[in-house]
Length: 242
Image (cartoon, rainbow, N blue to C red; front, side, top):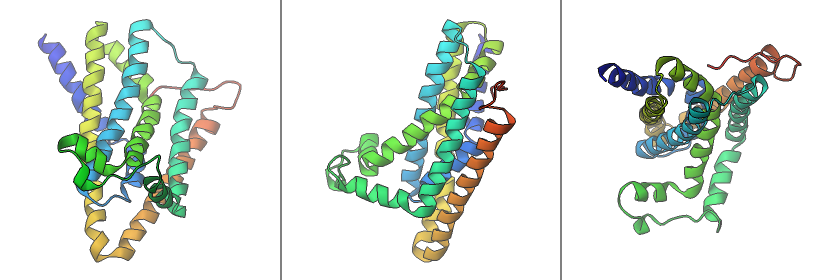
């Protein structure tokens, strides 16, 4: 039991480290660049982590419990979705479409803007203040990112823990670690952005542009790696879960 407890604790720690993967950091940085508040940025990180954990748990549990095998082309396609997401975020950020879409969505009847005085207390109130659009966006992006890493996490667990139910517990702790790590990362990223908003507005705009360029560049790099080097669109795709 002691060894199992240590492995589960390791799962939480590895989940926090997993949050620092470059594609994760680039994605949340692009989202957080428009947030006005460290607490709101941390909440966005938590929502991203929950979406990521949801996919990791569902796909990982299917692999562990039912022996589901992911074909190379499908695995590469899931990773390519991450590259496409980064490119899309970069384009939306650089063109200002992300900001306009957010403002338009919050002003529509489908995405109602909540008056802060009407919000309830606690976590639910924080989600209400964030707005429906800002809640679903990091959740969906987290789900897409979770697809790319779910197989690797499940295969790692299967080689370490033989009991399937302990392996499922590992997945949950890994996911909680990812949520905690992403909260910390988004809060740290948001600090200089929030600080510069009132003092150096031009610098703040520059941060937004840099975030968009990084997201766009990294997305194209991943797309080239997956489509050309790993052969997603070739007759013999080569995929190694990582």
